Image (cartoon, rainbow, N blue to C red; front, side, top):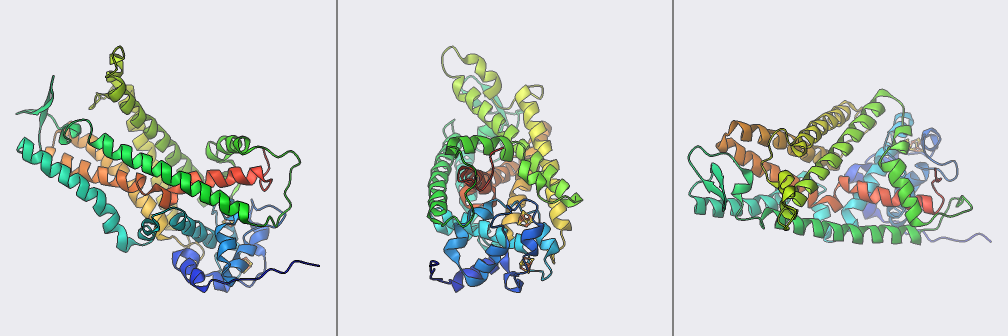
Length: 408
Ligand code: SF4
Ligand code: SF4
């Protein structure tokens, strides 16, 4: 006898889903064209048609714990071919957006990330912290736009000195401490989020045939996922085939590797700055004592990373602006991420230029905006679209482990 399943629709969930990008879901009449045309959907129990039914029925638990929403790379092929304009690609993106929003506590940050009306709160937190530090420092130095000279005791305000951003902070333990605490909290949030995500996957019935005979361990699946999905974007490249997809792949790869380069730069400076204090490791100061000279390899890497980032987000922004709005929506999550990355890249490069030209009155405000932008990207990472870097990687590793995705 077949098993009877009690359906518990959540109508509030349907409304929320429509608000965050799935507004056309009710137009679907279940023709299954989307599942047929999706270039990467498995033949066995394919997506996204089944997700369209679940969404119309308001099956919240099924959807937010559905491994398949993470297999979709949002190429939009299904939305292009949908005869009803139901935009199934957007629905899956909206489901991922809802997951970022609710996976990690405090959920209120997830709510703030979902609408532009809360941006002043999100930006106001770092803006206030840095402003208070700046005001306190200015009152000690006697000026808000100081020019410094390096002395053996640190930086001192001096006539004919230079713009030195680090001089704005009282001692070494200020900016590093703020970002250190933020980094630890972000790691803890991701840990809690990943645990919840995997618990949700575990709880779901596996409606598809669980494939391969020899099951890989989670670590083997994760290594495979990082090697192919993260480093080479293998399935991402198979998703769609038109010019827009090619632009998207290039933009995504450039942005991703720019962040890797900038991450290495930041780590190298931190190691140089703090490691150089250890007796016998003074040579590390050469990569940690900012401002670094232009010919320093770390500085060159930083500039290369900044330029790659600008090219990458230019491509991604141009593609998004050129999308057919009838078939592919852009949510606030998409624009928040692009906007913050633009702000980081532009203010970062402007900070370098303004320091060279020594225009303190513009350099320090620009640096202030840069710090706020970096905070907006990093501190709210577990609730933002960029969090997919972590959540999707884990979901794809899980999919390999259970046989939903093949090992390469
Ligand atoms: S989303 Fe469109 S293509 Fe997919 S089943 Fe519904 S109507 Fe058909
Ligand atoms: S957006 Fe692309 S990957 Fe996602 S379901 Fe549609 S066709 Fe498949």
